[in-house]
Length: 164
Length: 301
Image (cartoon, rainbow over all chains, first blue to last red):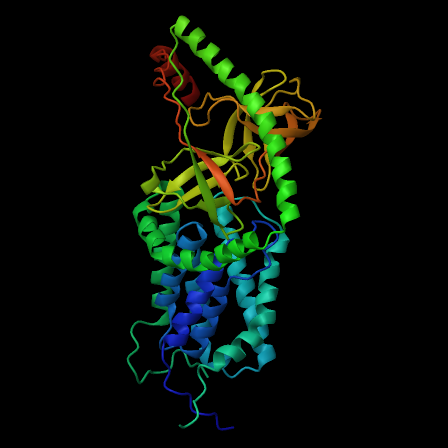
């Protein structure tokens, strides 16, 4: 099947989406009852590594992780570690993953998000926090459920625009 | 077919694995540095200034909505609220009169007994910018920083009791660690009996640890800061005991408490601009060297 040529991308959408995700991270919300919201920056790291592997890679994921750490007042390097792992895992199988059907992609995203959350828990337990219950992992399922919508919306930025 | 190890036609810098290893080593170093040694304060300060425009952006719609809500409040609501507030003011004023009286009396008594005068207490109203999204930490970010004279260690209270303390100060914002943060200790005493104890956060709640099994604790006891740590002024309500269980297998009584302050539902907080000026800690009594050496040698044998 001939795939349509993607338009020469601009980084505008990439920057914009990450800004939005960071804004969501800074949202003033109640402390409890929101753990099911996934880490949007992490989901976006998966998306952009998958679709723009030449532009967005492990180094940028790591830098964004540091920004997220500052925004969420968590330990320095916690998100950086998780995001660079996500980016790496996507990058080594990127050429397979872009050809997957949506269902397969959802399963992969679920696995990746669960892995990233497990890594976060391990890091936090190692640095002396309390375990906060299995409900924490619900965020991964939400992320996987939102993935089709997210990738359809963000794919608009990669479609060739109509000739004017 | 293994794409990852096939020859590459285009230069793309180091391999993904190399880059990943570099990044993970960097972040692990930062993690250990932050968790164990607290190296990264300057970097955090710079980052907080960078993020401030974003914070402002996210807060503006909320502030506008609040203003609109204020504008559209119904008059009857306002009248009812006004009545309630006036009643409360009356009660508070009556109490305050008594308090000023007592304060004066206290001062003269202290002067008489040549005690150190208590410094006047000032406070700073701060608004909560946002709560940390990180579910493992119990922290709030407030909108006062170094510029307003914020310092680490300032106690933070609300109308009902102690909320926590300022633990990290940035130019425009500050981080408040809540008392329910895991292993966050607050020295208290039980108001009913005067028994000293330490309240620890458990990550979401508080409990009193290391209280002997025969200690006199009941459900409903109020725990108040004792002021012996030099951080919290004495007399702030901290928590109320909900359950005290004596377990035959443990030398300590298990005391479950509930924080007094309305910890997770704040918009505005009061930062007490005060640090008790305690005299320096006395040197510990000299250890008798001979005895300890003997002990050491016996233990080595």
